[in-house]
Image 1 (cartoon, one colour):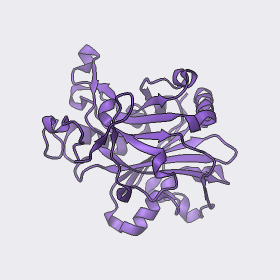
Image 2 (tube, one colour):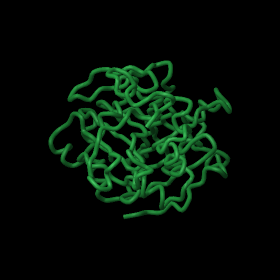
Image 3 (cartoon, one colour):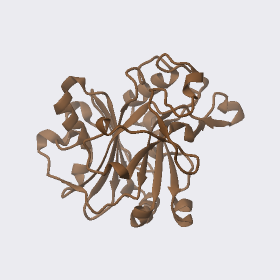
Image 4 (tube, one colour):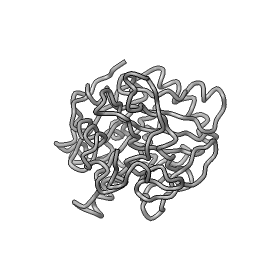
Length: 296
């Protein structure tokens, strides 16, 4: 599958991504994409506490998966990591649809760039805690045509963001990976891809310039327990998360990683406290969730 005018051989050149970014050698044969501090943020999590794992370190469904069940290494991610923020709020509801909060990364960038802001994909992990934590990651297209080049990936991505929640839940797949951590944590988290919308409540928000997924950990007893274990040991862990849209038919395969993030020994001690938002900031008419529901 061609990406942005480059053929498949170009994608597999060691040390580079299809958008030209270089790779940094990591541990356990997991390379990291070199992040340019000038292209990341502003965000409140220290730069040294996060990274972007190479999309090719994740296994995804290959072209002939329906008949062979074979998985292959993905091509590099279509989106690049641009921000990681940790927030706390007095009102737990203020953690949802975080892109509409005036102090969010998206709103700051929108104020700076106006209509030129790149389309932004946001994942907010709603963490059960007395301080109402939300851990928020934002990504933007790695190239100008990464989500609009007419490829199978681009078609599925646009079907996903414009679809209903049943379709989104059937395609939004998270791949967890504990790169460094205790055996107990690794066993609890696992590394098996999961259609997360079938396990926990995942409100989705679609607007002209962004798509947001909120992961409501408290909606599942199991997820709540696992995240509690991770949160208690997070300062000693290196956690990778990859997002891929599940391909079901030949026209949607092979799968390709949408985006990824690494959290390295992240501290939850100093979240940014968000002020209560006004009614005008809560939800714009074009960012309301569609048919969001709790799926056990």
